[in-house]
Amino acid sequence: MILFFTPNSPYARTARIALREWGVLEAAEERLATNRQVDNPVLQFSPVGRVPTLVHNGLVITEARSVFAYIRDIAGAGNAEWTSPADWAAIADEGQISGFLEGIAFWVRENRRSVAERSGFLLKVERNRTLRCLDYIDTLATTRPLPTVKEFRGAALASALHLMDVHRFYPDWKMNNKALGAWFEHQLDRQSMRETAPHV
Ligand SMILES: N[C@@H](CCC(=O)N[C@@H](CS)C(=O)NCC(=O)O)C(=O)O
Image (cartoon, rainbow, N blue to C red; front, side, top):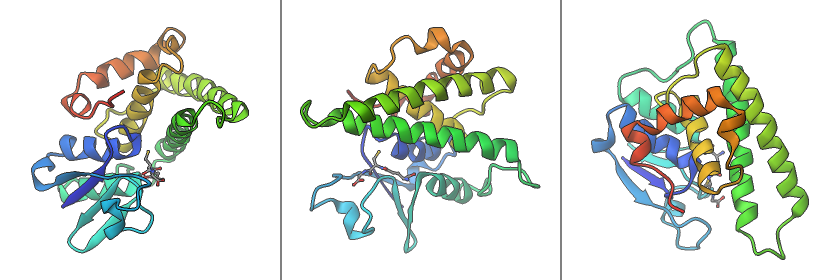
């Protein structure tokens, strides 16, 4: 099983966390992708060429949510973290968390462009989205316990928060979002988080 990743991708990180949390790291080879390069090895398997991409038994699985579910399934834990009948509250929370992660990933990409090319408008849109999401998810965290990074929405949330932190987009966020800050600090202690920390 090959898992393509890049060290700072919060999407790929959720898959790397899953390998560790669900005990299947030894069955996988984590292979570096070279995103947006013509010789990106991911392109041998997937025309989309994004991470995470998981290759196993002739299958090419993309999209972080599906890769997480697949890893969980081969670990013997079933492929769904939602209970049956569907846990719509968890599904609703996952939507907000995925949207938050997407916003942070976009913010990082925009910020990576040269100063002249950056859109001040889009940076502001993403900053405002982030502030709104942090408040919303902080309220969630005070209402009911957030899952650990062993679940996809926990891994996605922790990966997004960590990337936001290392880029220092909003250094004081924990002061204004105390419940979420406390949850995040707990996740940082986990080995899966330490082994996959982004490099800046
Ligand atoms: N919707 C995808 C998003 C994955 C994604 O955007 N990955 C980025 C890295 S953070 C990537 O591989 N970008 C390279 C590219 O778009 O060519 C998912 O959930 O996995």
